[in-house]
Amino acid sequence: MSLEQNKDPLHGKTLEMILNHLVNYYGWENLAYHIDINSFKKDPSIKSSLKFLRATPWARKKVEDLYISILEE
Image (cartoon, one colour):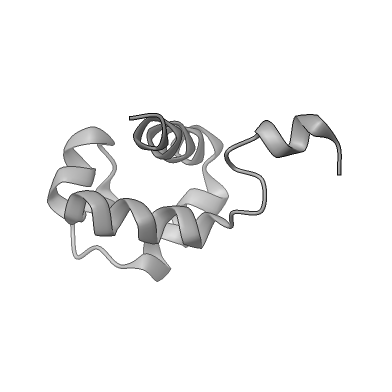
């Protein structure tokens, strides 16, 4: 493993792990406030959100960036 991989806060984290962490940290309502996507607002679930995020790079990037921001707090 390179030194750069060690510094990457997303290294070894699955999208599901990241999403679960954010939901536990914020709750669905606050998560939808931070990232305005329907899968967080209307009948949210991990499964439906993961399906959307895997198909939508811009939304996935917002989720990953939010996750990194709370790690840095």
